[in-house]
Structures are given as structure tokens and as C-alpha cells.
Image (cartoon, rainbow, N blue to C red; front, side):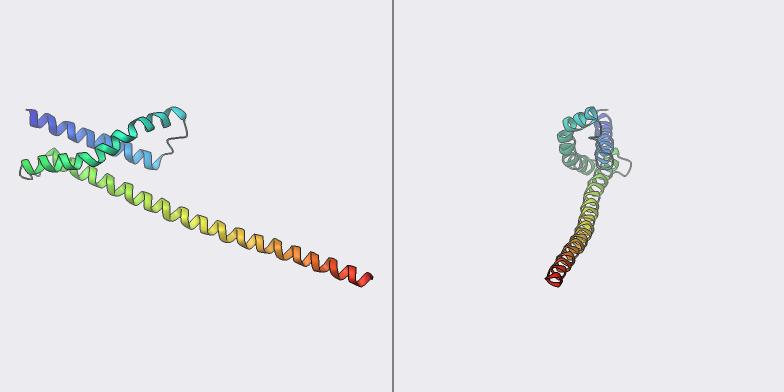
Length: 134
């Protein structure tokens, strides 16, 4: 009876951690102050659960001799998938932001060079008029 309860608790914690962690990665939680405050309060416990739950699940799964009907197996898979999704989303956000920064930087450099060349053109035009009228 206690093994069943423990497996259900670990499974429910895995689902909760997975849902909250993925929502925090996808949705802008700081759009509303109350949601951001709640997210900040539960962030550290969710991080600890993301690390500890696979260890606990694997320990109990090995204790049950890797039974495929065990909730610990599903808990382990859910938490590992959540960790991989988190890592991949962070890498994707980094890559997109890096690409966007490079595009903005290139566009800014192009516009700055265009403005600089225009300024030089006007400067030379002004010098030409001054030297022509003398």
C-alpha cells in the first residue's frame, strides 16, 4: 500500500514539475505581477524536484526490478523529457536571439555607414561650393 502511494506521489510531482517548468519556458510569466511572484516562489523547489525526482524514480524503479507497469518508469521518462525540452528550448532561444542580434547589428552598421557617407557627401559638397565661390 505504501509503495503504491509513494509511486503516485512521485508521479504526480513529476507531472506538476513538468507542467510548471514547461509553462515557465513557453509563457511570459512576468506579464502579470502576481503570476511572476508565484513563479519566483516555486522556482527553486521545482528546480530541486527536476534534479531529485529522476534519482528517486530510478532508485525505486531498480528496486521494483524495472517493472514496465510501474509509475516510477513513467515519472522518470516525464522528468527526463522535461529536462531535455528545457535544455533544447534554452538553446533555441539563445540561437534565435543571437541571430536576431547579428541581423540588427548588421542593419544598424549598414544604416550608420549610409548616414556617415551622406554626411561626407554633404561635407564635400559644401567644401566644393565654398571653394567654387572663392
